[in-house]
Structures are given as C-alpha cells and as structure tokens.
Image (cartoon, rainbow, N blue to C red; front, side):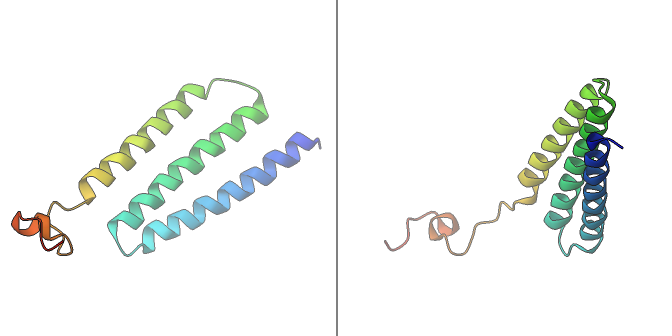
Length: 104
C-alpha cells in the first residue's frame, strides 16, 4: 500500500463523514437558510471527493464535472441568498419605515 492510497482512503473517510453530518444538518435544520448552507456544503464535499478520485487515478476526465458542480453550487447559494432576504423594512431602520431620516 503506497502513501497515495493511504491519503486517498483518509481523505475519502473524512469527506464521507462530512457528507453524513451535512445530510443530518440538512434534515434537522430549523430554517431554510440552514438547509441551504448544508446543501451547499454537500456540493463542496462532492467536489472534494471527485477531486480526490481524480488525483488518485491520475486523470482529468472529471475536471468538467468539477467545474459544473462548482458553478451550480455557487449559483444556488447566490440565488438562495438573494431570494431568502425579505424586502420588508426593518423596524430598527426608521429611514426605511416612513421615508424620513429619523432622529439623528
């Protein structure tokens, strides 16, 4: 067994544990943003796992898949962040509530 095999098994084990914990967090997350972050982390773990597999087998066939997964994860995170915020005025910001500057 070479050192590359040991490193691949250790990295695979840690990524597998991270994937299991992320799925648990996505299932138990109390709010939608928590679940969205968990799914984003799961995509990152998947990208890392594919990267380990590509490095272990010394091929570049999975590079386009890695790029597409990274872009999908980024676009998903940005879209959730964009649409999860509310457009309602915050009560602590008097300028947005009634259009005046408030008492400064």
